[in-house]
Each structure stands twice: as structure tokens, then as C-alpha cells.
Length: 574
Image (cartoon, rainbow, N blue to C red; front, side, top):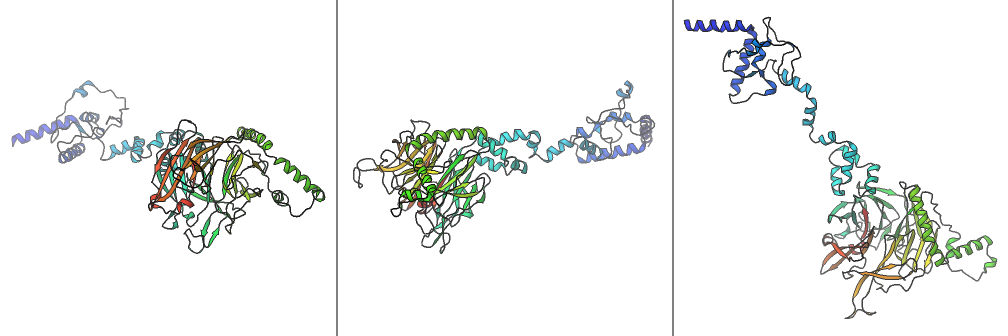
């Protein structure tokens, strides 16, 4: 009993020497008990604990000093210098085990102060996905997104709204188009599956050799339309659709369309352009790049249509209308073959350069559609021109009367060249507004069942046609059909052979397109009950290269044989 009393007296003496109130002792004891219950092996958080030396901050008057040092985040701003006796004073444990650190603040106050002073860190921890937006400026982020391939760019747009807005601006599209970050893409339209026009677009990324499928419900049921590429968009012009069996390729009862659709692969969106004046299926398309001040000349139906028609009766020119006679003679002189062809391409080239220098960012394009089949499946010789500025179609002069049925066409060096089934070639000048007959050396020999294809690559005019490699006439033991690439010399208008395609010409309607210095070809045919497809490429920049395969049997194995005749292809640099 005496020992217990002596212990209590010593404890009271220690408490009185510390000059600490009973309330403080009670709170410290409760905190120590809580820590002991949590576990003896746990280490206390350094940011929430302070040394026992902070008890020296309590003076004899009681209470905690405002400027006391309570941790690394809180600094002593009181400016009171501690004596060496207080610093060297050692205190024994009041109750329980000795602890190296206690929290002088009430429960939760230390954490509240820490959050108030470190809001920036808490925001970064709460939103780790947006940390790149915090550290990268918009211009740096935009430069990083510019260098992504198209597939990765489309996935990056799904990350957040900010990335989507950055990659959808006109400025971003222009910078990507002018830079060296794009690669060619082939878009295959008009495929047939299970007897129906599927309305699915197959896209080939040439750089990665990967095929992608794009749903196009707006094209379901439409077939025999033509496509062409204009910058980053694809124009779908004309076509047919069955009236009795909707969705099927049925020409027994069909409707011919004159509507025009525009597909944007970058945004996967569709829009409608102005409709043509005449309904057409499988028209021949060409795209011109003209200057901003180019004047599109419309056709004068009353006079210009008569220039290509034979005169009825024996009426002399003397008794004709003088104004009509003068216009007719002037037009005859302008169509005098070689004189126009030798001078016009140079003039057009200089005018094109002027347009690029004066208004490089404001390019102007026009689309020309000629030929094709009409509403009654009759061959057409009329033509129309679509202006992007006015969003209207304008009639152009008809093809020459003895030209025949147009089967292929392309724009090269400012002239729209059109080739006919009768092996005749004409050119149309969009600025002057008339057709020019082109007299060439005897056309390359070809098998007439295969239509020739005109291609423009790097300002040079090429034609792909099928011919016999040995002899002429019917197929024999020594005769072999091959597909050859010919080039037309635009100065002397003579054809020369460039290369021979390695594959046998199994496709009657093979598709060929050009992008810069590359020529792409797609052939689809049915053999042994299976539809096969081959994609080939030819590089015109290297004379030592030949045709090479880049894709085989990746698309057509699930398509019908009708896709061989209804397909159409366009190339974009995306």
C-alpha cells in the first residue's frame, strides 16, 4: 500500500513538473490506447505525427502555442527561441508504452490542413487520365496527334472530347494533308453478298496491309454507280436500284438515279450534293482542279449541239443565219486537232500554277460526268459538270457523234481524256468548254471483250488493256492473253509499252486507280466455285520495279460473283 501511494505521489510530481493540465493528459492517454489497439507493429504516419518534444510548447499557463511545429508541412512561425534546457529535457512515458510521436491536433484536423495545402496533388490523383492534358499544351498535343496513322487517329478521338475537337478542326485536316503523315487507302464500293447489295465499304490500309469494313446503309440496294475521290472525300454518282426486288442486282425492272452522295472517311459521315440533270448509271467521272477565278462555261443548247450532228437536207451555209455561221466557223477552227493540243496543255499548266500561287489554301474543284447508261438503259453521249462553289450541275457539250460509247476517262494535265469502245480518244478543256479530237498512232492491239482503263499518274497518261502476246485472232495453243500498261506521249501522241501485268486477265472489269506515283489494281473473278481477289501495285517513280502483290484473298471469299461487275474503287491519301 505504501508503494502504491509513493507511485501516485511520484506521478503527481511528474505531472506538476510538466505543468500539463489533466485534460491534456486524458486526451494523450486515450490516443495512446487507440494506437496500441490498432497494432504494435504498425508504423505511424510521419505526416500525421510529431515528436513528444512538442509537449514543451505547452507553458505553465496551459494551452497549445499557435506557432508550434507539428510536422514537416507546418513550420514554426512563432520565432521563439527554445532554451537548451528544454531541448535536452527527457520525459518519461505517462502511461502505457513509450511512443516516439503523437498528434497534438484534434482528430482529422491534420488531414484537413494537408488537403487544403495540397489540392493540386489530389486533383492529379483523382484524374490520372487527364494528366497529359495538364502537362502538354494544345499545340504540342496537336503535333503528336498529327503523326498518328488514320486507324490510331480514329481511336484517339474516342479518348475525350478535347482530343476529338482538336482532330476535327479544318486547321488540323489541312496540316495533316500538307504534311508527310498520310498513307494511301483503297476503298472498294458496290460489293454484292448473298444476292443483295450489302452497302458495306471495304477499306484497305496499304501501309499496314489491313482491311477494314465500314457500314454504309445509305448504299443498300444501289449498284452500278461510279466513284471518284476529291481531296479527303469520295463522290458516289448515279447508279441503279431494283423496283421489284429491292436490294438485289435485278435489271429486269430498275430505276436509274441522278443523285450524288459524298462520303467522308475521316468523320464516317455522309451528305447529299446537288443531283445531276440526267439519270445515269456507270458514268465516266473526272476531277479538275481549277483556279479561283476560273469561269465555267455552260452549254448553249441551241447552237453547240448542232456542231456534232450531221446536217439534214442540202441547205447551204450562205443562206444560214450570219451569226450562227460565224460561230460555227469559229468553233470549227478551234477543233482543228493538233494545233490546239500542242498549245493548250502549256497554257493550262501556267494558269494552274498561277491559281496555286495566288490561292493555295482555297482550292477549287469541279467534277465532270459523261456517258453512262440512261433511264432506258440507252448509251448517253451528254455530259455534265459539277461546281463545288455553286453546288450546281451544268451541261457541257456532247461527245462527238462518231465517237462511240465511252468506256473510260481520266483528267491529266488539265485535259479530261475519254476513250471509247471504238478505240477513239477525245479531250475536254473545262476552261475553254469544248472537246478536242486526238489523232494518235494506231491504238495498242487489244481484246475487245476487255474494256481499256485510262490512268493519270504524275502528269503522265497511261492505259491498261488486254492483248495477245503472240499472234492475233482466236485463242490458240501459242496465244496467251496478257494485260499490258501503255503510255501516251502527249507531244507526238504515240503509244509505247511500259510493263506487263503478272496475273492472267481473269477479271473483265478490273479496277485501276492512281495515287501520286503509285498505280493500284484490283481484280476479282470466280473460279472453281470461289471468288478470288488480288490487289497489285506498280511504282512509276522507279523504272526497275515491276508489279507486286500487296493483298490476296482477303475480301472476295465472302462475296458473290456479281461483285466482279458491280464493283468500283477509289483511292485517298489519309
